[in-house]
Image 1 (cartoon, rainbow, N blue to C red):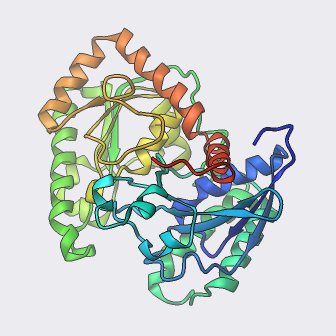
Image 2 (image 1 turned 180 degrees about the vertical axis):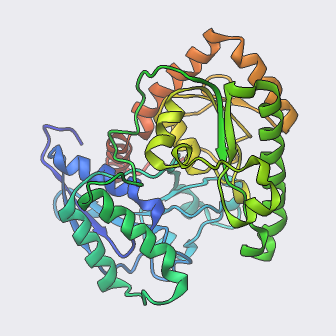
Length: 372
């Protein structure tokens, strides 16, 4: 698919507006704006029936009468969320891609699965597309807005509406805000995170949450003591966090509001990422890549397209004390910091920028399916 080729017909079975799907819609919107695709939304999908949550989407790309179908499985967990749909689609793009979860599948099913890559919140202002997305989801899978379990869904819809219709500061970042750019550095190291309340999770996730919380708390305490004002870090305010670590709570909202947070990331020399629940790679990591930062992270447990390697794109730690040592090393090596930033920025434009990401996916979908 090239810009001077006839547009590809892309039909999205838009029965969900889950938070993990905005990146996909943004890339498709940009491709339609450039004239590379004709985009249609349809509400009914046999491809994602039986999905365990809202983080799934199906689309068909076609040139002429025939087409191929891709399913996007964007849930945090590494297991295949819709194994029964592998026989209905041509390609299956998986967030938190890990081949260890594919052992029970047959060869044909495994050959369809591809890593989606880093997932992060990003959108583009397009009121007409937003209205159609909301309408399609309501027609396909209506929900009761008065049930408390749907509060998060309504909050997500409000974020999209604010981006498109409100003049006040928005929560959902526009695609133009999330890309590498030069910025004056004011802080040496940034690590702002949240704690998981184990009581709000399933039994199987509670011990994992405790380990994640303990690691984050130790890193923040150690770096705060070592770096003082050069460290910008802390825990986001929640009732649970206020009970557990009141001294680490970030009380000034200017440090946690969405717009200001992205500015702080840009103004930091080094940024830190810790694994989420179930070893998932959180949105924060994708944002760091989009902003072209020097990243120190716990080991990535899922694969991404294009090769994203330790030492070339980021530095890796296994324990809080090791994280602190690597911070010291990187603070004293400006050449290495610049190398990491350059490599991450290059990776963003090749593999993560929403338009390029979705162009690569559609090119693979309309071309011969490559067996891995």
